[in-house]
Image (cartoon, rainbow over all chains, first blue to last red; front, side, top):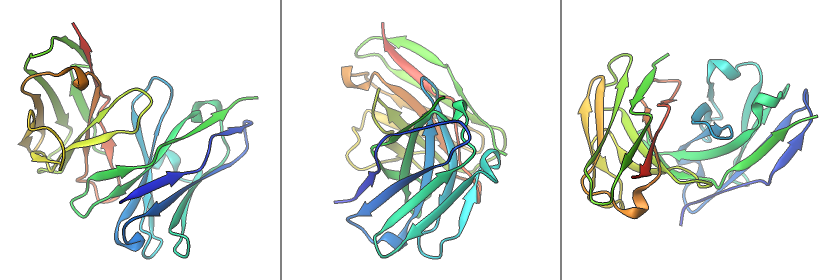
Length: 118
Length: 108
């Protein structure tokens, strides 16, 4: 069955970077884009960007341009999202999700809580 | 960027009620509109894709309609497990996706 398993919770200081992983299983890894979405405490869903695991091409929300890098490792079916220059407003649960060709997110990871505080 | 506006932001309803949530796009997005349900502490769950297609395993009391800029999600008879927050999401943009701000459905 399709699964997206994310890495564990992180605590970081302002100015640091965090790298969250998302390991895919149960389907052809290179066949679907992976998107990253975050949710700050008590807030709504915010799209961060996406990666094509096949060629590695990426697209990022303008808000995160210059601060986010998404990569993938096809040998382990894992995608990574690294966010740098962290600030308190980046405290959120970060989700990865698989996108189907019809452009909808049908499977989601369990979420990774990233807490930024000094 | 495409902006997505949901209304209402929250609503109170009783079990058995018919509930309608609307989502408006700032420009035409054809039928590239998806709906998700999220319960506290859980990842979002896909309900409707392409404006009106029911995701496999989702109860038939959920339905979606609309095209262009105006869309609706309808729950025909609200059940206890439907109390949650609902989000629309556009997938028209080539290089981006935008979510609505969410609609929280609470028990009256």
